[in-house]
Length: 345
Image 1 (cartoon, rainbow, N blue to C red):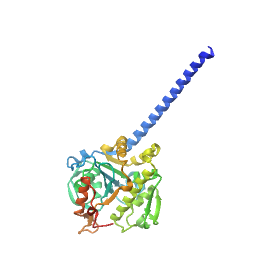
Image 2: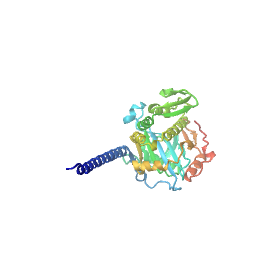
Image 3: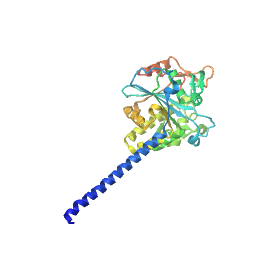
Image 4: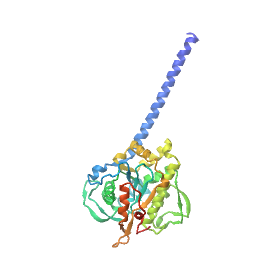
């Protein structure tokens, strides 16, 4: 065979080898991508709210507004046992925020519900399908331990008249992992945190907190402010804003490698409603929220007053609470009068 005829043959062979290598790389990448997708998807637990709650739900008033109930679970089970050694059985909704995203996805509002608030729990089914009758003057954070997240959603809806579109629950281990995946979160204190009752001890000023210390920070009660649960809500809201700002600062949603790391950490201890229980749904929802700026998010505590029978508990303050819920339900600006809580932290 002449050199003239051999050259095209060699070129064809090189081309075939090159195409084969490209195909292998594409398949390998696709396989890795599918593995990653399946892995993250399998991390997410979900609850079908409509099935669990039934028809006893308020109607949605503004179609394109969104209301998301964010729960922080203080279960001591599984990986959480290593993070907190308190002698507490079961689990409670240690943190509860109803986040309202207005139509147009601009300035959002986060309303914290104090865990010690005495409320009326609606009739609910527990995790085993047993019906729990309605009960008056029960602590808000006990609802989760008795009947699970769907009952918490139903309780918030009956309390507020606001339709909850989605709920997201993160437990201790997931929260710690998310902060560590970010490389820490920076918080600033205007006065020292004393570290009372095993809490975190910090001087006034800025601090970069890892996952373990961040968990102590949001659970601190006796070592900062007036030592009340109402005071702790301020720390929780401050930390949530700092973490959202950190995610935005790192452009985590625009960096695939960092996004996967965050998603893996976050989804390991994540429970959502069934409509959000996939990476695709979570990603689409996150993209729709990109216009919300953490720096302009308004944080409010549900107005409460000290209970006249038990001063260690609080009750919903009126007419402030009604004004607050009406503003969220109708997608209006929250009036200043609705933010005036008789009991302050």
